[in-house]
Length: 380
Image 1 (cartoon, rainbow, N blue to C red):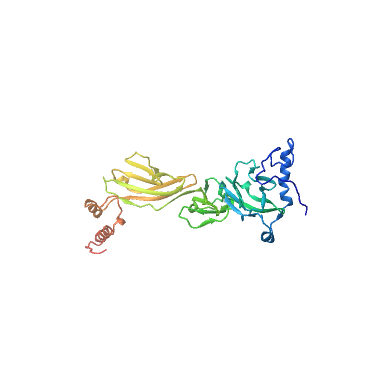
Image 2: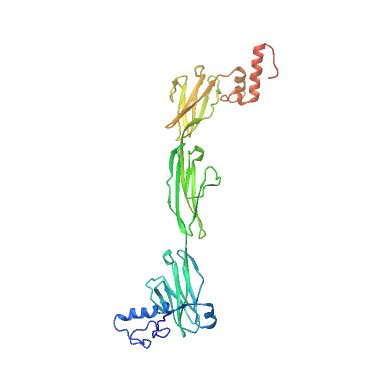
């Protein structure tokens, strides 16, 4: 193995210039910088990796740290243990000299000298970024020959979601694909889960979430989470709106006495919200006409009769409509029999049906049996 032998300045004289006591080799003019660089670089190719036997027999061996793992943005300290046998020392990154003795060669202001003693030679890289990752070499000149030791800087990056699908609105039965891309070191694990209704576990353990023939029950918020060991997860949400035609629960018939107030109600589930229309027989009812009021609130509709007349009794149809379809249900407004009127007079709500109260229903059954047989009846 060839060895570069040059007349180096004493330790501590790396910054000497022509004419100074430490400058033993003339470097006139602008040539001094590249000549000095050549001198320092001669340390590396002529040097030998430290062997276990060398550590036991030779003084001055450099001993760098194990791999240094640092989070992006934090500071990395590179330490090199030396002894009194070292005459010259430098830190290098690839082929670039960072520090030689106490002299800074790196132009990067983030690289600073921490310790330059007889036992330790350390530098610090401030605000580490991913491009700082790689091998760093501690190179020393001893009385025998140059030696080197390396340390690898590993930069960890917190997870970051860099691309995610926008919230969307689709019709029931459509196919949906959501994308969530994340970066980080180590590479983050990406998962999707459905938040509403309450979480049922992961919807996908992948960057892609695919839903075939989406149903209205699958609407809601979906959460993408990117996780690695560096920091807390990065979390983003996407909302899926599922549009569907109205569907209605069965209407509830209502009894009301003449001259009293009666209210018919219906409810529809739909996205977007349904609009309502009321019909009696084939005739559509208008709000404010013939003493009736139609009021629609959050998927519910109320048809109110402020002064029920005999002509108001009968079957009514509530129709719910949106852009995807319609649905309807029938509701009966009926008059009250004597038993019912007596109950209303005693305080029973006039706008509630017979089936709403078991005692009242029993009394009505008794009344019907008595009328049919002409005999008193004491049991339903």
